[in-house]
Length: 448
Image (cartoon, rainbow, N blue to C red; front, side, top):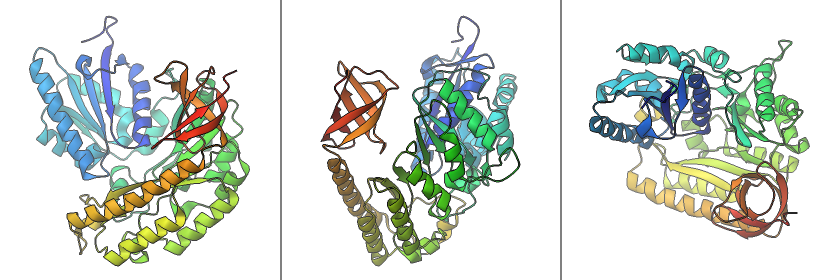
């Protein structure tokens, strides 16, 4: 399987959130500077890395299912030695248990120790099995490459500015898998944004488990917040669009709201999870905001940017949730009106306080509540999409479509748009929205 130039091939499969996507890209950069080359084929790889998610139980089940398929593949090719590694949040949470359950795994590496991966691979090549789940996130940010290896970027890219979370919501495993909040410096972020722009990236999405809790140091040692950072990034030559995710309602300060008002480069789309519409359940979740706090915040944001599209997260069936609590969630969703939203049944995660709480909700009740909530949210999304039909908006073209002359881009509200045009990838074009599909638009452009 080793390539003709003696560079070993590595395959990385990414599960879960955008931060995992970003981490996988950076790991690709790192390994391509260490005698590896990336491959999109698991079958031809010398090294298989599974970059995992641990937010919900199904994500962990998916890992072990995929490890079973890898085992079968290895058994069918016994003459070939393949390094199999589990990295990411499940690696951080389960550690040596992964190797116990799947002996073919040779390395287990948590998100904060990715910068050590080349050395770990050398140890594995000597026949060792390595579990590395230390919390060294500052070292990770300092040592993962952003310049050493030049890779092909699309017109849109992720840029992690913050990692970890100090909020300790009682349903969430992130503080235990990603650690405490750590923020990159202003210079680190700006330099990476400039390199991305130089490589042809037009749109950057800033990432963090609690991205609007970012508080990085400026060159003079002063502490910056996200709003100020967005104003600085708006000055980067070549950048045409900025986004950020995922936010916490408690960290939407005045400067950040002002950025939505004053920066045309900041897209009118905001993912602002609320999780529940009952103050009693929000308290049990340790969200530390009330329904009225959230609604007042939404009103302030929409006053600053009337065309903003709001997205949210909801959990149904959290321990102790009654029918009355759930009706309040429906009421909140109805009042806010979301352009899109993600909704899930509560998933008990080992080590989180919610696991041991009284009043665990029956699965059948959770199913029924989720169906009702999703019906409402889906109808809101349909109404939002239909409301844009006939309007003219800017579209950033990202790739060619399935049909001749067709291009696919993103609207300011993150919605995919298919359009017939002669314009090329990376171009921003004015498009008339002609039709709303289930999750996308069809538009027209003169193409001249």
